[in-house]
Amino acid sequence: MALADRHLNLGRDEHSGEVLARGGDLEAHSILQRTGFVPVVRLHETYHRLPVGFDAAEEQRLAIRAVARLRAVSYHVEADEAFDTETREPHYLPLGSQVTHLAELIREATTSDEVSDVLTELTASHDGVLIALGEVLTAAASFYSDLGQAPDPHTAKRLQDLVEHRLSVIWSDLTHMRNDLADRHQDHPQRRACAAEVGPDEREASAVCACPPPPPRLATSPAAPPAAHAPAARPRH
Image (cartoon, rainbow, N blue to C red; front, side):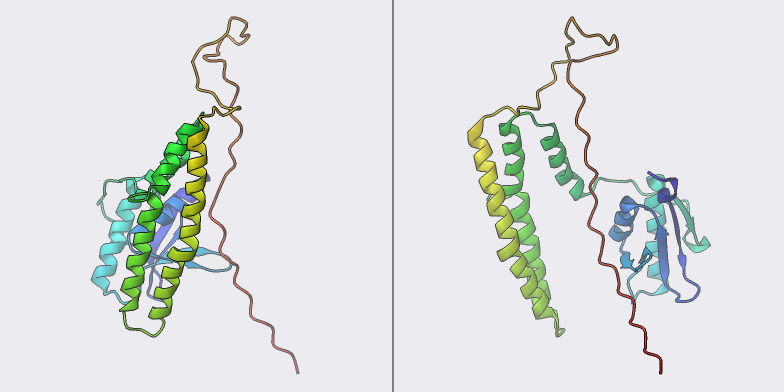
């Protein structure tokens, strides 16, 4: 990770008067968003701002909290004097980290039964992750449907369509895969549980097990947002 990714600037913009945060990596962006900041994606940069409509006292409270949360996990934050305090907040793993742990369990799995168990956490028909996600989207749709602005019914319908036509397909496909793996009882041919034993013909005196090195992991990252289109040049007369 680049050192620059651990550095942020958080202060009030002298031109717009908005409280802005610039810099940081995806973890820092997540902390800002959980503190109330809104991401702003532009062609050449991404930064965060506080929502519109807050008074100065609320903006200061949220900015101080953002600085405290970022510094609690060792980010270097250059902040306006009004936001620069000794306040710190304990850092707790968010709910998404628990779901991410399921991916680690699959990466470490050596049998089809182990992966089937993990996929069950996603697909369980009463309290699986996908069922819970559907409940969240349905609740958000209900909230939007009664909010009162012209686009809100369309947004509510869009959320319900995601549940009925997108999420349901994902749940159905993963349930089929989970059931297939549950019936296989198969060891993965290229993975095996580590017995922490070294054979007598091992050449490396430092070896602690006979397992081959793990394959390289592919780095994953969220898809980049679509680039903004530059305005068309006006024809010269």
